[in-house]
Image 1 (spheres, rainbow, N blue to C red):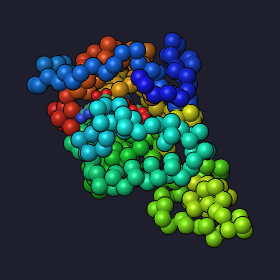
Image 2 (tube, rainbow, N blue to C red; image 1 turned 120 degrees about the horizontal axis):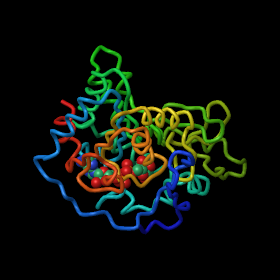
Image 3 (tube, protein in one colour; image 1 turned 90 degrees about the vertical axis):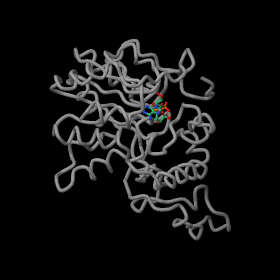
Amino acid sequence: MDEPGWPDRCILARPFSGLPRYIVFEARSHPLPSPEATLPHPDLPHARDLVAQAERVVALTGAGISAESGVPTFRDAGGLWRNHRPEELSTIGAFERDPRTVWEWYEWRRGFLATCEPNEGHRALARFFLRRGVDGIVTQNVDGLHTRAAAEEAGDGPPDAAFPIEIHGAIARDRCNDCGLRAEAEPLAAHDDTARGTGTGEAPPGGTLPRCAECGGLRRPDVVLFGEMLDGALLERAQTMAARADLCLVIGTSAVVYPAAGIPLATLHGGGRIIEVNPQATDLTRAAEVALRGAAGEVLPELLA
Ligand code: APR
């Protein structure tokens, strides 16, 4: 994978004793295989049996579950990291060097996410966990579509069981880069505060960017950037849930970004099984009991009905 400037690769030789909490990816030793979707899914009955028999189920989702909502993935053809340089847009170093560029990138993503809706995959997953009332969804996605699907599918009931653990954060929130205070996102244009400049007539670095109401620090989107630590409590909840699960549904992720990609392995180590839903094979496929090749929006309603 040609992504210069990334942190060192993380090899999960001992997945559960040394999972890194900072976000890294394992460079793949081989290119992504070509699509190999097969319909109808010959393994669907077996997969449905596994779902029916499982007492505890966890789902790990990635960008692929939102693809049918029109949200670009990262590493597929046409994916964000095929056309943009992540080291300039989505690392903590980039934010410290050039916060405006990072802000504009996330502002652009916020803009198109505002036009996207949850799809049948989000909805089927939300209904499934609402029905069960236990266990839940761990997502790498920051797009908020699981949360919206949960709220919409819950009707008058509490949507809690279908609310995801968002281990990479939520793009719809801001967070202070200094004190960590969270705040609702506001449009970049609403923060033209050059008035409190340096007195030299020049804006300070980041001077026109949103500032924390509490400490005056620079705000940033509340997402985990490459090179940053994940929230320890969230990661722990996700890993505990996965370790206790009989079944882990791995949906729409290339499974190359750690520590997220290690979460299904916690289920395996606990004696549980994996069902993968993805049009392509991944490094996790060989660990899966069943790999359903297809789009999440088509497969999940059949699998979880
Ligand atoms: N249904 C299911 N899977 C799909 C679909 C679909 N309709 N379309 C594409 N996919 C699959 C692709 O085959 C691929 O395996 O989704 C996966 C998307 O992989 P990535 O683009 O690498 O996304 P993801 O795994 O979520 O990336 C992890 O990388 O840049 C970071 O922080 C970002 O959370 C992200 C992390």
